[in-house]
Length: 51
Image (tube, rainbow, N blue to C red; front, side, top):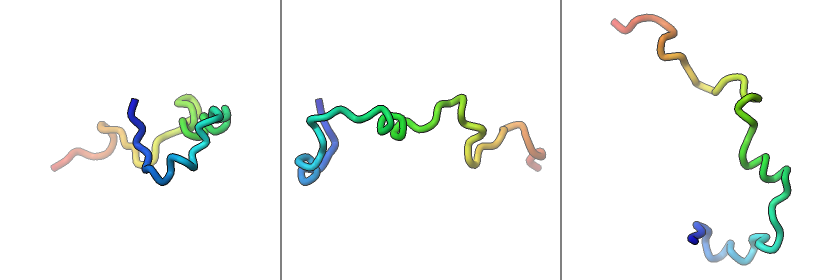
Protein backbone atom coordinates (compact mmCIF):
# COMPACT_ATOMS: atom_id res chain seq x y z
CA UNK A 1 0.00 0.00 0.00
CA UNK A 2 1.25 3.46 -0.85
CA UNK A 3 0.19 6.70 0.81
CA UNK A 4 0.78 10.00 -0.94
CA UNK A 5 1.46 12.12 2.17
CA UNK A 6 4.61 14.16 2.91
CA UNK A 7 6.84 12.85 5.73
CA UNK A 8 6.36 16.03 7.75
CA UNK A 9 2.60 15.47 7.84
CA UNK A 10 2.72 11.73 8.64
CA UNK A 11 3.23 12.23 12.38
CA UNK A 12 0.35 14.70 12.62
CA UNK A 13 -2.28 12.49 10.97
CA UNK A 14 -4.86 10.83 13.27
CA UNK A 15 -3.97 7.25 12.28
CA UNK A 16 -5.30 5.76 15.53
CA UNK A 17 -8.96 6.64 14.95
CA UNK A 18 -11.25 6.13 11.95
CA UNK A 19 -12.92 9.19 10.41
CA UNK A 20 -16.36 10.05 11.73
CA UNK A 21 -19.41 9.52 9.51
CA UNK A 22 -19.79 13.31 9.17
CA UNK A 23 -16.17 13.64 8.01
CA UNK A 24 -16.60 10.82 5.51
CA UNK A 25 -19.76 12.41 4.09
CA UNK A 26 -18.06 15.82 3.82
CA UNK A 27 -15.22 14.26 1.79
CA UNK A 28 -17.63 12.46 -0.55
CA UNK A 29 -19.87 15.48 -1.13
CA UNK A 30 -23.61 15.42 -1.71
CA UNK A 31 -25.41 12.40 -3.11
CA UNK A 32 -26.23 12.47 -6.81
CA UNK A 33 -29.95 12.70 -6.00
CA UNK A 34 -29.30 15.87 -3.95
CA UNK A 35 -27.48 17.74 -6.75
CA UNK A 36 -29.77 20.05 -8.74
CA UNK A 37 -27.34 20.80 -11.56
CA UNK A 38 -23.62 21.06 -12.03
CA UNK A 39 -21.90 24.43 -12.27
CA UNK A 40 -21.02 25.25 -15.84
CA UNK A 41 -22.78 22.21 -17.22
CA UNK A 42 -24.48 22.59 -20.58
CA UNK A 43 -26.52 20.32 -22.72
CA UNK A 44 -24.66 19.54 -25.95
CA UNK A 45 -27.90 19.89 -27.91
CA UNK A 46 -29.00 23.17 -26.29
CA UNK A 47 -28.28 26.52 -27.83
CA UNK A 48 -27.82 27.56 -31.41
CA UNK A 49 -26.13 25.87 -34.31
CA UNK A 50 -22.46 26.57 -34.99
CA UNK A 51 -21.95 28.44 -38.22
